[in-house]
Length: 124
Image (cartoon, rainbow, N blue to C red; front, top):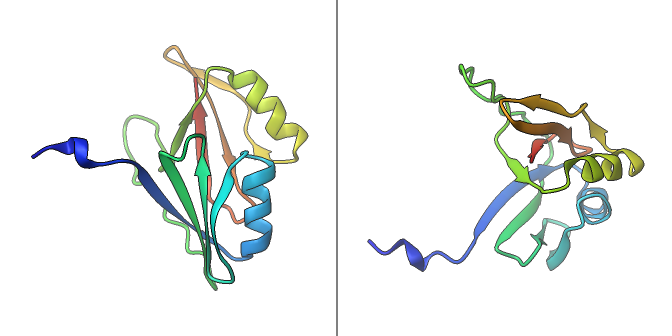
């Protein structure tokens, strides 16, 4: 099978308030809206659009806990950066809910969550 047929990746993110979440993902994460489907969903791109996030309006958010493991991972999605301290400071200035930067086995990282409690991690 030729896996070169894939052209990108989409992630669905449940949100309670679509307008507020869209503003947060734009202002804090720098995502750009590429499809306005309000009041049900908005599609936003990260960077060149290879990865898109569909913010999906839901009535209730049911957290999906990450299964216990021996590797210490407790979130589903990682972002990568080459400037973790600069990005961490930016999120703090924007008022985002962020953890301290931790170093583990040569990798620096921190966790953050959106206003709906969806959790992510950033690593360098």
